[in-house]
Length: 352
Image (cartoon, rainbow, N blue to C red; front, side):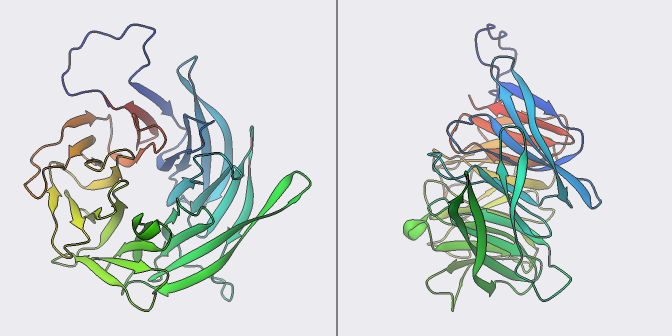
């Protein structure tokens, strides 16, 4: 992210640029970085068109020309609420990505095209589906995914990459468990790295609570936080290095709340420099004390929270985009890079 002081001399031509931009054919919402080590600057982008027919594009930065190249485009029913690539930092699994919307869909990325692998539907007895608001892919066990839905439930899915048929592994999935997670709609779900990183997850929802679950003891959950006036909570994100901390934000809220699971119900910090509603939170993949937030005020802010519980007054870095930032992702395998979306633009920013 271009550092705060402005007016620095232009970089010599041999130096890597600080910002790369891609203009998509439509408004963007869902977006995420590929994790595979051999696909460094590859991202998936989802359109936000308020009709049935939407698209997903896979783009990759050509480091020789400094331009993004579209590798493939495929149809997607309704806008994706989230996109994730399989968390495969060693490149040993099939090259898969998942999208949520009306259902959870798994896709296989090829060199020039992306094909559907399977559609995971937990509502086989009805013509109607309860849309999925979000999902998470377990980093410790990439055969586990969790989805959140407006029907108050979370579902944990098991994924199988089955026997090789010809040259292709067949991918299928099954429901491991489904639970009523909240009193109202569930808006986000995220696995925690605590306790081995496989069994613990948290969710947030329209009832204004953050709840924590353990797959080994699903008969009860722990309420980590409740919004004082029961504003719906839209997003949550776990600290990538210290599983005691997570961040959340309320619908139409201008602040991000940092929670410590060891001190339930009392925020340990509030990040409130944004001047319009916050849309995204991304923790640094390599540091326990840095988190990035993005909002409708066009700003992406990086915060250093190591002085908690003392108040965090100001961010340490700020970037102002040309539009309202509705998505932010910090590259897990390339901690120098943050991606944002606004309007029809993707930008990747180098953190200085």
